Length: 125
Length: 362
Image 1 (cartoon, each protein chain N blue to C red):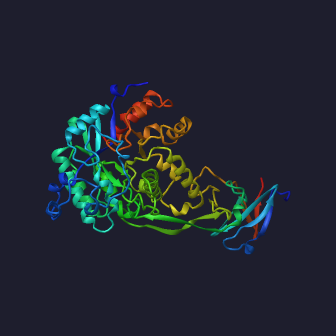
Image 2 (cartoon, rainbow over the protein chains, first blue to last red):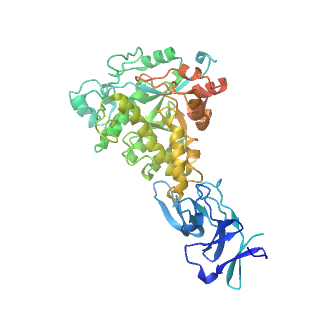
Image 3 (cartoon, one colour):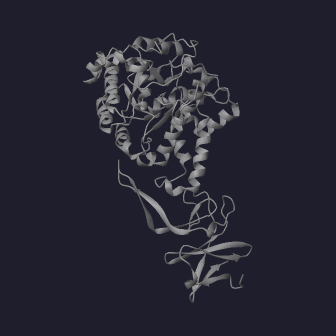
């Protein structure tokens, strides 16, 4: 950990679509991921079984819309909402809030992220 | 401990022991004529080769051990007086009649006109000869859900009939399962009319619901009712019927209470791992299912008290409805509720009658 209250992750250009970069922040691992044009950071530990929650897919959230009685619920990928899914059992979390997408009583801690001079940092304070 | 005789008792599941002979004169043509020329006997699902509905196997009369004083069950042929006498005997103030014969409709897989004809005839028969709100005899209208238009016909017919307080969806054999969008028009209309949807298991298909070859009724009756209810609860919950129709009251009958905690616990575990597959849900499925109402019968009174207490706690005593299932072989008396040691008297009164009074608008 650096002494300026942040941890360097990687240059912006090194981020792979759909995958997080994992860094150590103090004694915990944090996954930093690019979702659209924004970066997010979540603790890399699933509240379910302790799995590496941020090492799974980062993707747009699949949502459904119901047009009315008798109509199929049409599913599509959200324009704005991204999720990361723990590769062990598929628990999925909103990358912005850290909340489980089906039950917001389960939340993965989130961290502030900043980009400076083309490099991504996780804030530790 | 309260005395049921001194409090409102509403029986949410009394089976009218009807016969085809009673209903046939009220059926639309051509069944009205076809039936009366068919040489079928007067009885119902016992008619073997010439049964109107597919028969389910199993000796419900438990080798002659079961007798009914206030019903012609299993042969059928009850009339209004049988119900009144039975209500007095059991101490029931109001009853919701559900056709005995229609429980086998789920076994019909092709000729859905048969189901429509029976139900339309049954509803006319009840209106003409049986229901009587002044005597506490109400009814639930079966839905011939193979045919949505026919179901809406039935809803049109009962819309202004004071005695009809809800509809029945027979769970056994319903395919696609009852959360499918196909049934939305029924739910939409019921929501508009303020009619609860009562899902009731049935005997048809018990032997073959998963695999053929069970040999005794103890096996099929234990499993079939559970399977039929569980499969429909999962479908109704996951497909978001409660989100689509938030003012619709949903009631599940006749599988006791102990299966609910297990089912919702398992479903919630699945949901945590596959949330996107139930996109209409705003919260875990258990929270919808415990908003449903559940008939108590056949209550597992032999289970550990702490298990029953847990079940009542998870479901909520404001969501439980006393149901006798009379005259069926495994019926429950009102004392099944009042004798439970873990309930207080207010809970007992709610379960015996007050919850049903509110849900069904009696």
